[in-house]
Image (cartoon, rainbow, N blue to C red; front, side, top):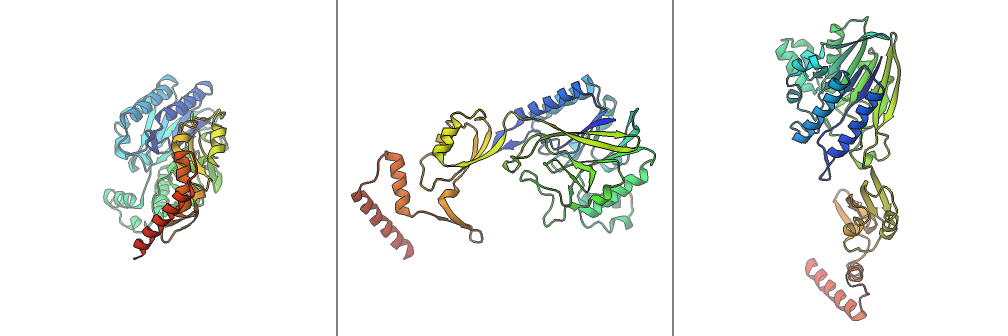
Length: 389
C-alpha cells in the first residue's frame, strides 16, 4: 500500500503580520494534484492542522475545500490527529459522523485505541492508530479519573512517561497479525527543531524516546517542521508543507509517500512542495542588495535582510521595499560591535558625532561643514556632561 504522511499545516498562520493563507492554499493544491495523478490508499495528517485553537474562518474554509477534494472527489480516506496548536475538541466535532465520508479525526484517547482499518491487496488490513497531542497532565487526568486506575498514572512525570503509557494502551488493543501505523504529535529526543515550533515545555521535559515506537511498521510524526527520521528509518517527521520561519530557509519542504507490504515498511520518499513565496535571508551592504534586487527573478520572496553597512542609513526599509516588496524584517549587525547578553545592551560601533554626520549626509545629500561639526560636538559634550552629573 501507499499512503501520504504530512503534518503541521498551521492553516491561518501569520508571519510578521502577513497572512500565509494564500501560500498555504497553493501548496495544498499541489498536494491534491499529486493525489489526483498518483492515487494513494490514505492521507495522514499528523497534527497542527490549524495554527491556533480557534482558527479564522478563511482557514476553516480552506480545510473544508481540501477535505472535499481528497475524500469526496478523489475517494481517498484522510486520517487527522490534533496537535498542540489545535483545539482538540473543536477539531473533533462530529468526528463519528464524518467517518462515513472517509474523514477520520482522532482527538481523544478513546478513539486512539480504535484503529482506522484500510484494506489493501499488498499489505492486507493496515491499522492506523492516532495518538493526539498529549501532555502529561492530560494523560494522568484521563486515565486516573475515567478509568479509575491510579497505579498506572503514578509514574507519569513527563512527556516520555505519558507516551510510554499511551503506546502500551495501543499495544494492548491491537492485533499483531495486522500491519500497524502509529500517528503521533510529539518531540522525539535528539530530533532537529526550528524557530517556528511552539515549545511544549522547558528544560527538555518534552522529549520522548523513539524506543517506545519501534514495534510499529511506520510512525508518522508531527510537530517538528524539518523532514527527518529518528532512531529507525520508519520513524519519521514529514515536516511542514512550507516554511514558517527564516531558520527554515534551507529546508526542503513537502510531504512523504510511504510504502508498506505484507512484511511491513518498504520505503518513504520525500515529494517536494513549492510555495509561491520562498523565505530567505539576504546579507550584504545596502547598495549591493538594491542592485541585486533590480534583476532578482524572486524579488517577491519573504525576506530577512541583514545590512552590513557600518554607517547610518536613512529609511533603509523604504529603499529595500522598492526592489524587494516583501522585506519582513531588517537587521543591522554592522552598526554593532557586540551585544552584552547579560545587560541586554548594544554598543554602537561609531560615536554620536560620526552617527550624526552619517545622518546629515543621508538627509541633505552633502557633508556637514567644519563649523556645523564643531557645533554638534559642543552639543554632544554638553548632553554627555549633564547625563553624567
